[in-house]
Length: 416
Image (cartoon, rainbow, N blue to C red):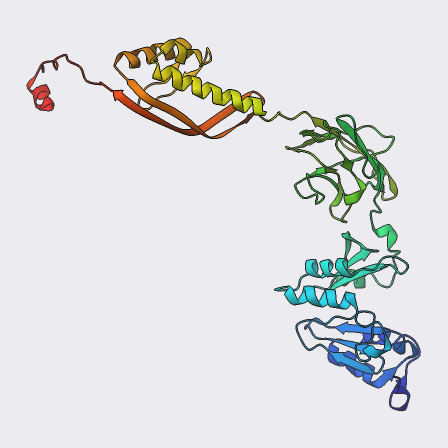
């Protein structure tokens, strides 16, 4: 591939440093690559872009300009794919994801990086997203794409030349206990992990491996310090002794670090309580946080549903028999019945009297059925929603008594 020695000036040192130092646009960068060459130019690929959205891939003497809305480079020479590494699943994956996206954003690029990172013998060491228009760099360590460090280029350039070790910039969260897949026999557990006490943490509880259902910010305490507080969870997850998966979904971000626990069970809600933490440190230390479950309300059993249906049938039989005592016996002592267009009837005895009066009016029925559409409830409280069919054989609402005589002309006119 090299043919630069005949037409270009040799540059002693990494040519990309010259490009970064002198070029302000892709055209200027292309000009430098057209005038100079260096040894490492033939052992690497360069992806160069500018804030206007232009980009190019430099492979030795070959320069491939962006032709569409995006450009992807992976570990094979696109100018000479016959040299090896092609087809490349990473290139195909990135191209597919970008092609399907309506717009490009740092979040999308992060998803692409996550989908194409390498593990095993040659793992991804670090990844970066460059927002050239805003001059922001997002730095990821290894293949952890839940945590990033945001670098403001303008601010960094004002501070002058310096270097950073990447690892200390991150929280370095590592679970200590409970171990992955552990079954917790009781109703509480203490999470312990190593990380920076200066990071912000959340505990996320979910009924699925994706911890997005309920996340609550927490304030952990350095192991050995004073207990600060805990998270109480109404529900049956820990009470049932089901699996508590800790390390599967431990993740973090520099702004909000997620320490996620997945409860395989029902989680209804949560609350926290904490006091001021003892001396935070930017060193990696062991942290802990207490999580407890409270027994949740038990749902209706099949026996409960059957009993509720039986009450409905007993009520229908009492109405058909015009038995006010039997109908009232199905109500609680302090029951309240709220008929339409009438004041509420309070108490079993008042309800019995109301049924007695109604039956004495002659409300004889040949058919009265209740059809349940939904029966549900919990913890001693239930409802029965449905429809009723009532066929009356005799329904007398009038009176044989004469109308009262009007006392004035106005009353007489009103009667007419």
